[in-house]
Length: 276
Image (tube, rainbow, N blue to C red; front, top):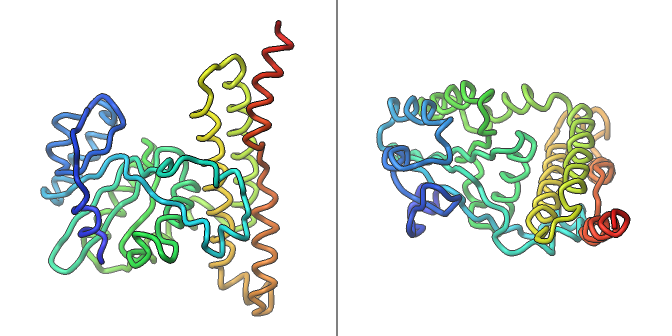
């Protein structure tokens, strides 16, 4: 099943503009009622000027398939403890033009995490497994809006495959896989340092902890799969040995630091006790 049909068949439910509640409908109606993504209304209206029947799905749940090979190799056990449906795509813009169906998956955190989310969405035996060539992952932040607009127009034109467009932005935002690994390590350290600061004295800390675990998982996921998808590394670094490439990809993902769920809980409690 193609991406437009999959998303379009999901029930919209009731849309509450002031909350991050699942919504599925026309982008024109969303912009008229939305109060959460107002900073991107200029971008949305530019996209609508190109295609006025563009649709949007907000807060789309994504199931993580822990049985897939990459997830088994990453073995980030805390990701199993996340509530079902905790991974969500904040904004999915999607459209149909004749036989062409396309979608933009937009995460509001980082481009690396957007890639990790994309890889989760399109794993074998998942809802979007047959749509990997129809979805482009980008980061919904002000500094990326011009690139989102350009990528959208390229997808509309249909002259380049979605995968080719994605690779262009991968090269632009991620650099080499070695450079990506360094950024993943830095980013994960930052995420967990922030989480540790936030949980101190916080009674309801589930969301802070779950969010940190999820983000670290997406980072590991993105790095591992990006490494495995590199034909250049397979040929020039691993002499065509896929097994060796997989070992290195796992080692790279293992370099991304984590703080366990239980440690984050203990950290908050211990800090409070010391303060008392």
